[in-house]
Image (cartoon, rainbow, N blue to C red; front, side, top):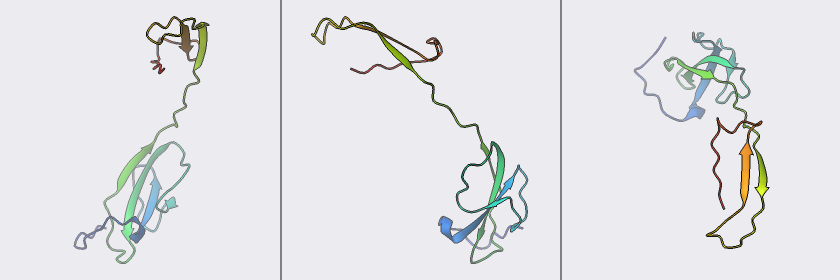
Length: 113
């Protein structure tokens, strides 16, 4: 039940947050998780509602979020193919290569000197 005659504020410490696994919220106080910040959630969909601590009838509309798989940063291998022999920075003659597991086609590399 939503009660919209009381204005909500943006101070997260004045609300209780109720998290439900999936896209369908449970009626507070029933929930799978409670709290402002929920860490280490498994991959999937979660729905959260906020309930005003001073006015439990004031409940936010449900908001559904998706926790995606954590991204793994690729391991870049960089190699010197030819050492630098000219010290003039305007005429560099060194050669290097970079790849990720042997793949250099599907990656972009930025080089900074």
